[in-house]
Length: 273
Image 1 (cartoon, rainbow, N blue to C red):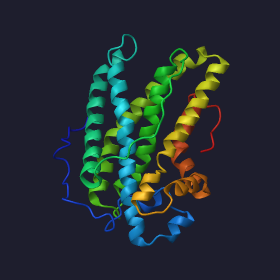
Image 2 (cartoon, rainbow, N blue to C red):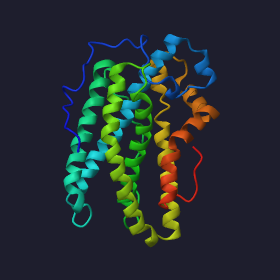
Image 3 (tube, rainbow, N blue to C red):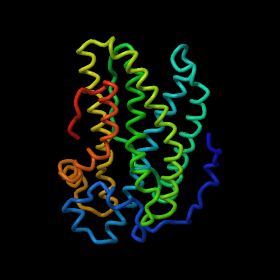
Image 4 (cartoon, one colour):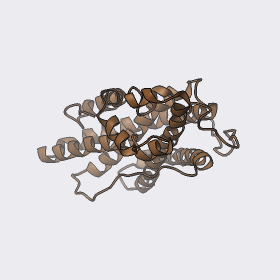
């Protein structure tokens, strides 16, 4: 276990950030990179967009970690479920709480708050073990997608050093969380999948693909485009979701995650994103 860090003293927070003056997200990771809309933007406009995109990315991870903390604490002392790893989960939850503070401080200081989530959660019936498997799939989706971005940005000298450091700190912690999550989810899949009917498996796979697509939808935020000065934010979102360059990016980022779901039997075929 690495040395503990203090979220309140780990970073030097500038008094303010100028959206046009720096890159805040690696250009290749900006949601509309590779599109005709991106090509029409000037350098300052691209940097301004990257600022709002990093706020959106930090909001995505923060909002993904909020139910993670709730779900982990709910599961900690459930008999015969997570007992053997409860001690680690206390450490896990403490780190995730620090991540929320870290991302929240950035968004509040420099943007006035986070971008709210748009997901609608509907009640549903679960097969045996499915609720826990679905929960850990949600955790893994947020962490795997986020870690891809963390890795790309933590060493990118083009972007603001504060943003690079936040990405690095997050990646170091998440590397352990991801290893735990993959192992635990594999064990649950092995324990329960064979007990599900064909209809239950099909229903779960449909939900998993829809959740993954919904998570990607959060990366194409009309409010981000509006705040960055682009006209018709919803039109830009629609364009990006359908554009071949953006689809190729989603599939590249998701490749490792989808291969894992295929390997442990949670998916039978790679979905189109």
